[in-house]
Figure (cartoon, rainbow, N blue to C red):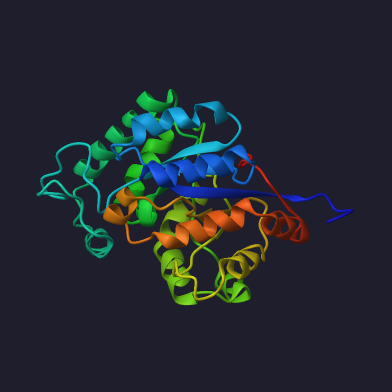
Length: 282
C-alpha cells in the first residue's frame, strides 16, 4: 500500500503453552515479526518452561493470559466446578454460566491461581486478559475477569472483546452462525467494559469452524475487511506434536495457519488491506 498511513492490527496467537509444538510455532512467528500478541495458558504443565522462551520478546509483543475454565486440569481444587480434577467441556460451562449456577468463588480463586502462575513464570503481569474458548465473557465469569483487570492488572492491561456487529460479520461472509453465537454471548461483557471505559479492542475477528474447507488464506483476507481503530484478529498457529494430538481436537489446521503466517502472501495481504502489525495502544 502507498500513500495512506497503515492501520495498526493486533494479530494474537492463542493457546501459547498448550504443548511444545504450539509454543515453538508461535515463538518462531514472533521472532519473524509475524505476530504482535500471544495469549498464554498458565494452567498448562509446560507453561513454566515455555514462559522463558518468550523472555527475549518481552516488551515487543503483547503477552497476555488465556484464562481457562474448560477441559484442562485446574491449578487447584474446584470441588463444584471440577469435582474429578478436570474442568468440564464448553457446553456445560456455558449452560451453568447462563443459569448463574457457576460457583463464583471457585472461579475467582482459580483465576487468581492462573494469574499467579503467569506472573511467577514470566516475571510480570499479563498485558491483557482473554479466555480459552471465550469463557471470560460469560455471565459470572465476566465479573471475575473485570475484578482481575482492576485489582491485579491495575488498569495497566486490556481485555479482549468478542462482540462484533452483524453487519461486519456479513461483510466477511464466513461461518456466520459460529461468529454470531460468540458475539451474542459477549454483548453483556462488551457493554460493561465500555461503560467502565476499560482498554479493549473495538473490533474482533478470527472466528471460523477451524477447518480448511475454505483455504485459510482466503479466510484471513476476509478478516481484514471492516472498520475499527483497534482491531484484533485471533489465530491458532503451531506445530503438531504428540502432546497436541492427546490434548486438543485442533491439530493439522494449526500447521496450515502457521504456514500462511510464515509466508510472503501474508505480508502482501496485510499491505494490500492497509494494515501493519502492532500492539494494542492503551
